[in-house]
Image (cartoon, rainbow, N blue to C red; front, side):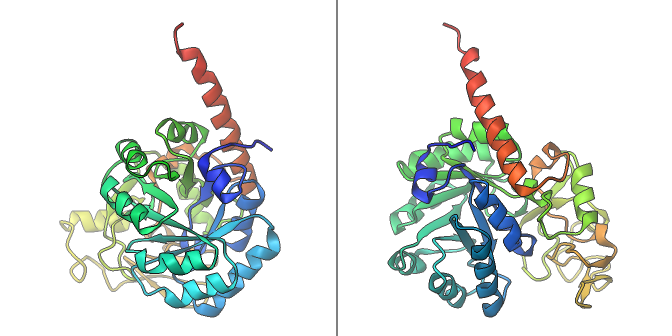
Length: 335
């Protein structure tokens, strides 16, 4: 196994500075554990799980790996109870996003865990660092799923690195292969945060129709909008263009409550609950109906993924390509 030496790998006690983005219920314990076992850092999402299920997925993940893994909590909702479960269960890394984590940091540190926080500007990074955040995740506008800011990865990451040095900065947004990992290092980052590429892992809990749409997509096929916001109002996100977005655009991009076919049921979850057009949920295994009309989260790096692979293989492939890219860069310099 390749081993990278960065401030991130040393702090987290991992071998490869690749972090699995905590993509809601798309991340199974099997996926998180596979990334950790491959030398990266698996991340679970607990935000939309009930308290007991949060405990269950943490314990399931721990049964599958002896390596570090973390849990993400979205601060658009109260998270004190879920955080308590994470700390009781000994989760070593807690990630926060979409809100102010300062009131939780002392509590996390007192339990012996590290704090990661997703930011979208140098000023925000500086405030988070001063509050005690250990690792800053700089999310560029290219990212898939819910997007915190509006600055692209390349101008954002160096600004954040300069603002919080020597703390580790992780690059998020548009990273889908080893060349992106190498580029992140050149920008000063100590690691990367990868989402869309892992949706095309064998362990991802998304419908095969969703995976096929990702495989067919090009870098021009994503849209940044707030259109899929039933369940998370006014929440900017990036997803694949589909007929729901096209109907909304044709109507002049109206706000919620005034969108075409807003009350239409377009599918059913595996548990029998209905799926409405404009819901923030994505097609999970077992869903039926107009799956291609549902929210298909994806970042602008989607065109770089060409096949479904085991998650461990994705980690290794990205790491090997990063190493080759960094090595070949030496030949560019004229002596």
